[in-house]
Length: 136
Image (cartoon, rainbow, N blue to C red):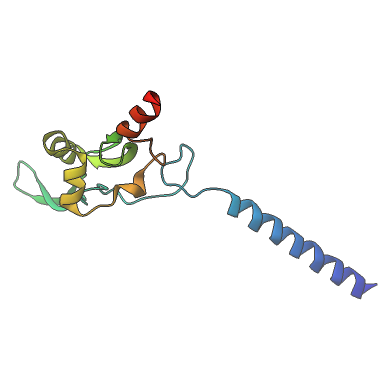
């Protein structure tokens, strides 16, 4: 009976491991999900700007102590004209001003970033192809 109990316990444990493995494999590990628990570095997705940890606070008595200047990161959903789709990116406000000046595609090209990683959809049909379908 002890042998039967051991085999039963091993069978239950293997079943439990298989069920939990299946459960966690079906969940997406997208860093952009609303209730995602994936911790990401506080860094701009396009320019790679990170916090400045070399700054100092200077008191009235001229005592210097270390402090940190964090990046002003904003999560934005932007329209990518060349890819014809929306992308959701965490970008610094400084990079956002660059995007407003040069455009999203040119800024991503400047920093060498593939925007397909951040796309929310597979894209829509190009406007010329949609016009051909409408006229047919």
